[in-house]
Length: 328
Ligand code: COA
Image (cartoon, rainbow, N blue to C red; front, side):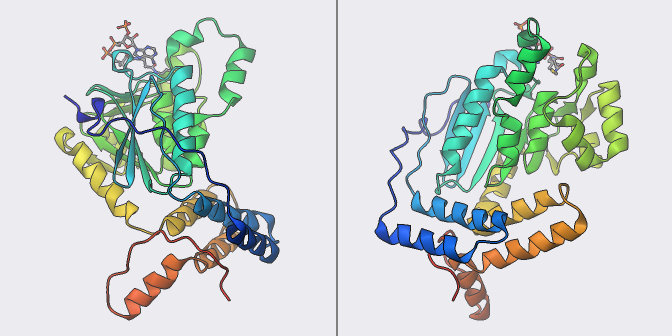
């Protein structure tokens, strides 16, 4: 039985109300705003880091989800899409609950990395719930898709997200995996964008993210034929990062997640933001913004400790101490 179907620890307790920043914190916030006014996105990034600092330790994940499970394993949160009888097909409720749990984990500083997987041993996610398509008009379908996309929530999530792909990874399931930062697949996993067989096209980022990841030729092949490929083929075209035997999937994925979770959360966040820029800006703009994000790391205690530890030939202490003041 897949262990994730029954979490080792009970579903997490309800979130406590977020404490308001005290006067000292408010002063720090004002200082940050004063110093970083241009360019506007740069200022925004540091304010976001500060906002995360004020909520440190406050976030807990609510247990009131019906179609997903949430389990915390130290610094890693595991989200399991839990509709195995429907091959974990995503209906509206799954998407809404998925977005809600990400919202909760976003400000929970004790969670550094998120893993997303599917319940059971057959499917990661077999796509959108096709049953919901039956009575939809073009307008209602458009509304559903524009109303807070789970794919975009994963894409812009400020912490690394890993897809642990344990079986069918099709349609919206493949698009969800594509929105994640890393994909680890079981040898039994299979991938495809079979929407064309239903007379539709991928609508959750498949035509864009798949093309950016594997190139136009392979994306065309997968989307136009709707054919399903195995995990090794997916690896050979760069769709997945690693393929492992089914019985090692959880261990290997947790190893990667734990390794990442040890790093500075600020550096992780800025690295993710910088990498995402590569496919969204031209080279000059990307390089310029990379320099700004690199410089922003210099406002963190993690950078001070990391550099100091190297120079003192010792291991750095615990990461995740958020910057409380600007560099002098
Ligand atoms: N939406 C809604 N229900 C789905 C589903 C989906 N995307 N994928 C599977 N299911 C349901 C089936 O209808 C079936 O429900 P039932 O038991 O009430 O009849 C159940 O899940 C099991 O599916 P089944 O086809 O019997 O399992 P399988 O292991 O033989 O095949 C798949 C699995 C994933 C290959 C097959 O179900 C499939 O092709 N699904 C659709 C994939 C797809 O087109 N995705 C893109 C959607 S845009």
